[in-house]
Image 1 (cartoon, rainbow, N blue to C red):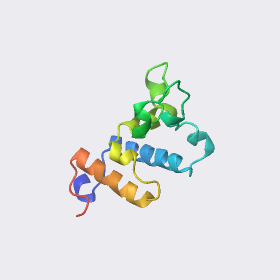
Image 2: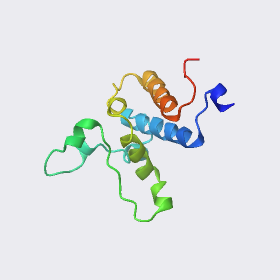
Image 3: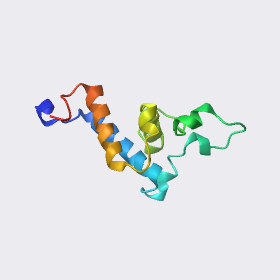
Length: 118
């Protein structure tokens, strides 16, 4: 049934929502308290430039305790974003609908659900 309706499994559905929220943070369309949690590595204070700054990677905060801390948006958002392919992370900021379409295709291919164009 899930394949006929082109639904994602629950885990991928959550990841899709988190990534779309991080995308809105990158565009500046999210609330300020969420935008502050999605800082690019290039914006972090470093003594020298990092190669990861050119790849669209976000700073992942360290979780001191296990399960609950890893579920916070400040940890989970940048971690899921950094797990995306580089071409999705560096997608042009002008094409929100196109980005979300490519993101759905990425999840369809990754989960093995039927073709998204059917």
